[in-house]
Image 1 (cartoon, rainbow, N blue to C red):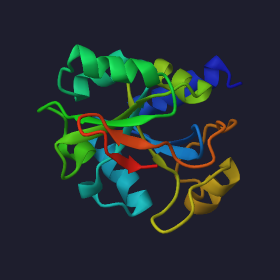
Image 2 (tube, rainbow, N blue to C red; image 1 turned 60 degrees about the vertical axis):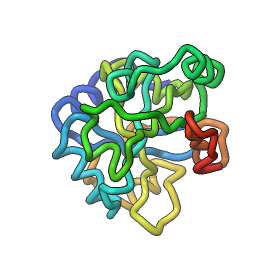
Image 3 (tube, helix red, strand yellow; image 1 turned 90 degrees about the vertical axis):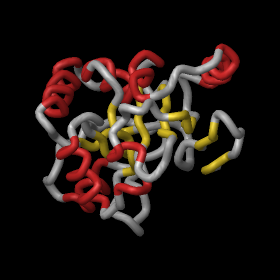
Image 4 (spheres, rainbow, N blue to C red; image 1 turned 180 degrees about the vertical axis):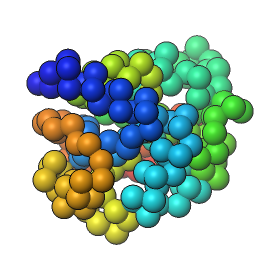
Length: 184
C-alpha cells in the first residue's frame, strides 16, 4: 500500500498544477486537478487527445463529483448507488458550470466513484475528484505498469506506483439517462 506521506505529497503536487500517473482498476491513469485549466491542457497535450472528446473524473465518494453534475432524481441516484463505489463509469448530465475542457463537445460528463484503494485514497488526500484518463499517448496501448508510463512520458510527470485492480479492460461507460453502453 502507498504511504500516507506519498499520497499527501502527490495530492500537494496536484494542487500546484501537476499532471500525475497512478494505478486504477485496469490501467495506469493520467490525472490532474479538473478545475486547473492549464493542467488539463498539459494532460491533453501529453496524450495528444483533443479537448472535444471530454474526460473522465474519478472520486472517492459521490459528494466529490456532485459539483460537476446536475441534480439527479432519487431513481437515478439509486442506480448509481447500486454500482458505486466500483468500476463503473457513468455519463451524467453536466452541471452548467462544468468547464468545457472536462466535458468536451457534450452536455454530459463521465464520472466514477472508484473502489480502487490507491485511486480512492488519492482522491481523499486531494480533497476532490481528479481527472482520470488512460496513461498513454493516442494510438498506443494503455500503460499497465509504472515502467510503461515512464517509457511513454519519460520524467515528465510524477508516478504513484501501485497494483492495478482486477479489470482486464478499461471500465465500462454507461449513459445514465438512456442506458446506452458507450464503452463495454
